[in-house]
Amino acid sequence: MATGPVLGSQAQVALAGNAQSWAAGMSGRTLATAHALPVISESIKRIEEKEENNELVGQIHRRRSIHVGARIGGDIVFQGDYNYLPFALAFAMGTESAPTETEASFRYTHRLQYHDSLIGVYATLGLNRNIDKTGSDGLESAYVYQGAKANGFTFRAEQGAAAKLTVPFLCRELTDDASPASWTYRQNVNTGMEYMLLSQAVLRIKAAASTALGSGDVLDLPVSVEIAYSPGLASDIPDDEGVKDEPVMRTPPVTRMTVAWSRINQTLRTLLVSAFENTTALKADLIFTGSAIGAGTHLATFSFPELYVDSDLDAVAEGSDLIGFPVEFHAQQATAAPTGMTGITKPLDVSIVNFVNADPLATS
Image 1: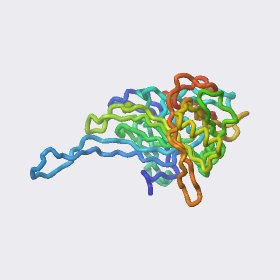
Image 2: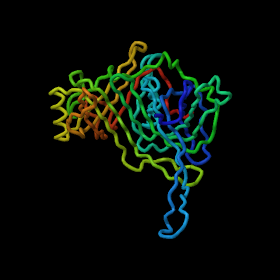
Image 3: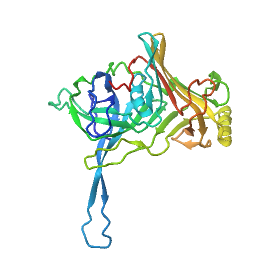
C-alpha cells in the first residue's frame, strides 16, 4: 500500500538551506541543480487540525468540530548514497562543517554533528511528483515549501538491500509553485549512484575507557543496523492559515542504535551481557567502505563516543528459519572524547567521504 503521493520516474526532491526568518512572509531559496536529490518516496501533506466541541454537555445540539489550524509534514525516504546522504542528513543533525578537500578535485570529507537546538536550521523544500514529465501536458510545476525542518532521522541498513534514510519534515504552509526544469541531478542516478551496503561495512565496539578501536574489535557481521535520532521538535499553530511558530525541542533528544545478529559468538555475548549488567559505557563506530574515488574510496563512518546497552540478549524469531538477536543501545554525550575519537563528544558524529565539494547547509 502506498504511503504517500505517487512518485514517478521524474519525481525528485530539492533541498536548500534557508537563512531567512521563520516568521510569516519569509522568502525561500530558488531551487536549482545543486539542490536536487533522488528519493524513494515522500508523504508530505496538509493535515487539518480539528477538535470536537464538547462544552454543552448533556444539551441537545449539533456537535460540530472546531478548526484549530493545520499541520503540514510527512516523511521523505532517501536512498543511502555516499554522495547524496550528507544533503539529507545535514538538515536533521543541524551542523555540517564546510567539506575539506581530502584529495584535490577528487575526494571531500563532510563532518556532521548535532546542533544544540536546531533553531534557525531549516530548508526550502521542493517536491516534484510528476509521473511522466514529457507527456504531462504542462503539469510540470512543483510544490515548494519555503520553510521545512527535519524532525530527526532513521538510517537503516540490512543485508540484501541498499541503506535507506527516512527523514520526517515539519513544513510551513505551501507558499509557491515553480517549474522543476532546473532541478537536475549532479550525476546520472541510473549509473552513478554509490549505494551504501551493510555487506561492505564493519561494526566495532569496546569499552569507552579502553584503547582506540581497531581490527580486533570488529564484531560479527549484523543482519541489520538501525540508527535513529529524535530531537522531539514541536510547534504551536497560531492561526487558521497554517503559519506555525518555528518548531523547537520540547523534550530531550534521543539517539538509539539497534543491531540484530543472526548468531552471536561467545566473545560478543560476553561483551554485550557484561555491558548490560554493569551499565558499562562503550564506544563504537559503524564504517561503510564504498567504491574507489580518486586514490581512495567512498567512506561513511558513524561514531558513538558513549554508548549503553539497553536490552539483554534474547533471541527473537524473525522468519521461518532465522533467529535474530536484536540489541538496543542508546547514545549519550561524552564528557571527554575517548581514546581514538579525537574531538568527538556528541552522541553521534558522522564523517562521509565523497566527490561533493558543496556545504549542504550553505544558505546562498
